[in-house]
Image (cartoon, rainbow, N blue to C red; front, side, top):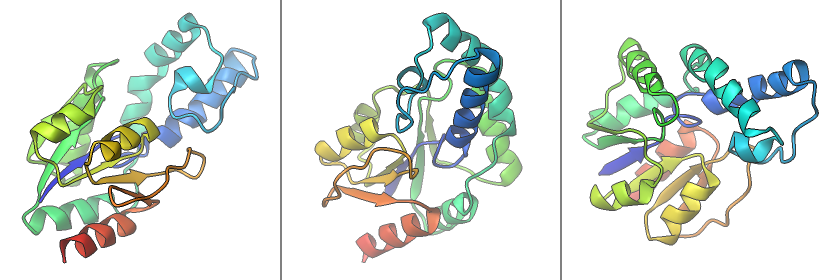
Amino acid sequence: MKIGIDIDGVILDYERVLKTYGDLYDFIELKKNGIINRNEHYLRNRYNWTEEERMNFVNKYFLKLSKQTPLIPGAKDVINMLKKEGNDLIIISARGGMVEEMKDVAIQKFNEEGISFNKYYWKQDDKLEVAQKEHIDFMIDDSYDVCKKLSTNGIKTIYFRDKEMKKLEQNKYLKEVSNWGEIYRYIKQCDM
């Protein structure tokens, strides 16, 4: 099987780290209460920051936070099991789009953890195109918008949903999970 995997919020706990420091930046540095939508995935829709405030946060924190972000529990073990079972694992990530060096940080972390993938697609804003091109059997992502678009277009999508994020109705193309154990179980049950 070919399994597409996002990085941030799926393998690396970057989204949780980003929200934590976004809230601190908003409250301490900007002296605001700028959260306009706690359930929003993207900074530009989560806070009422100006473009300058958002870019200051990106430039000051994105790379720094990327370097200190831990793996999501179970990610390494399940990825290695899926790889050992002969699945093709393909990274499809927007990472590197805003801060180029963030992809190097991810590769270094994967090397340190002993995790490898068959292919890497960086700076991907439209993951549907890559998923179709690669004939992905499953795509694992934490973005509401990405999961909705992929599943609507007939790609089996695993929505790794943080409890604060918007819900999507599950169907034959969309499965909601909250941990890597659920991901492995779902993939294996579909493979039977």
